[in-house]
Length: 291
Length: 342
Image (cartoon, rainbow over all chains, first blue to last red; front, side, top):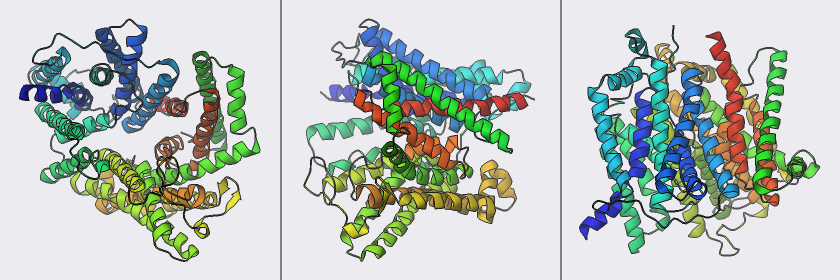
């Protein structure tokens, strides 16, 4: 009974976890991706789109969402890694584009699709993507700590000049991290529409992308920090929805939805007050121009 | 974007912008024509008629431009100081709530109520923004996240007010009662009201503020390099809070104008995503107050035109997508220029 309750809360974890992980990877290499919300929205759309048009397979649709995220990540890295556009400005552009395109294409090209198959095989009521997310976090932890390539990513985020001096290709590291990170965000969106809510509604991402963005800052740019942060946030959402479903009135109901947002602001302020931006990659947001 | 010191450069940029607009619109129309099975020429005709083709359409576009312009100016102040205020939408709603409250419940003489509403909206929107500025300056809390979260919070507050204590109880969807007729701003020619004059004045004031005052100089210095500005003895904390105060204050004024000049009440969706479109308008204007009226007009044109296309069964989200494409394409030459000079 308890196990079922916990696993049903945890089934939401990949949405938050994958998005946070994706944004984290790109920030670690020194590139802000503030379009998480938009890329995720496009992921939700493209998942359902592919499910309807490219054969009714959840796995292929998840892959499609992943590759759509990859494409928009590449666009972002072309704009700000190679062309040196301000990362925040380019991110705004991408946010508008993805958010608008997903809404527009949804209303024109997408019939209402209802998905009634579930993702299997399941272990403890949880599907493979959940375990994949856990494995990805573990891999990322080992990758950033113990491998040569992982250290190269950290070096590029901290000091691109020094990284370049020891022969690391700063541009290549940054674009791969940005594109791959964005792909995970797209996957998170596709998972949200295909597996969690099993259909598309407009604006279904409902701020989870921004929450993921906040969780990276809250986790102070450490893999374990963002992992436990997203786990905690998943439980917050789970408890909130459970209270709503159970009909436990916490008046006024409009303010129920505000709790996570207030929590994020408070948490960030407290984290900041305790120790100023410790852990933030020093070159985050700074364009690297090779001499 | 529309940089260039010479007149020739400016004309070139303006022509480029118009080219981008026309080609982006053509592409989106072609795609829509294919998807919705409406004639391409039909779409173009509808877009033209609902924007620049008719007097009514053009007045509507100008009316749309007003709130977008006021909030764009607010964002320009913040962006020039490299403070990323993306919560303009929320600050507009703060202005809406405050103005409605002042006009409905204080029972003041009309003129006084209008003046107080504008002042209170500026201060409330400004305080809401300044909170994010304070968190950034004091504890380095990222202002992008905070302003976005603040938007969600104030949206919930508006929903609570129009559902609950301020609900008028008449009509299909929740909204407040109308404000007294004395407090409604006059129209120049319906639907264009006199807030458009306020908006243009503010554009001039913002230009002066940024380019002719010490405060503006310090803001620009901080915007181009925080560390250098700090070493010059500029008080970064004060300046960050102040730029967010002005930024949020302007957005609050935009909300105030929406209530006093267009809707005469508070209702759901009153802010019409203007705060988000203003981000695009500010970036297209290259964060310059003098160019903001033109970029706001451009955005309003797309907004109104695509809204007109809903009559043909096209989704209203077409506007957002078009603005996104225009924004990315407009930013490209800036990037290419950098690449060439590097």
